[in-house]
Length: 197
Image: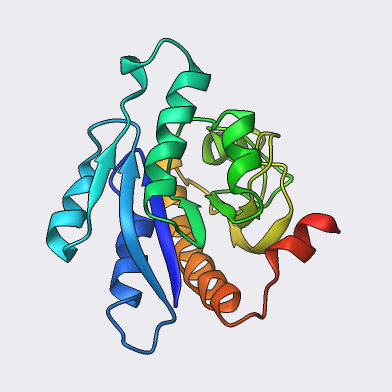
């Protein structure tokens, strides 16, 4: 059974999808803790599903490295096999990435390497692209440039807004995440091998 710590900054829609999937006794992964860098709405899912939560609030620390060390200490306390960044909107310091890699994955609302960064959906619309997508990557110290685990195209419709497009990307992100966690748990995806290639 693969144990997961999921890190969020917002509502946790990907987290909810993982929690729903893990209600199935056959699903080979369980969320053991939910962490956040702020008082995120998605932390309420911990209470709903009986999962412990922790918050390592960024403003409480003098710099990103000190915050990262505190976050890493909290993560390590749960001994996860895999850490999932699920809408965590803060870049992890290099030593946190080094400590968790390659068992550290992230979803992104674009077809990487197209439109990396915090505004992937907005950037795709601004570029006048006809399609974008969703990607799941192994986190490294670049901005959304890590090895790609899975990705899928999503068409951009005439009249799409950032909100309407993101609403169509999110279900694809959730499906890719669930499928990848399954594949990692079943040994069909080897994150170490992927990170070496």
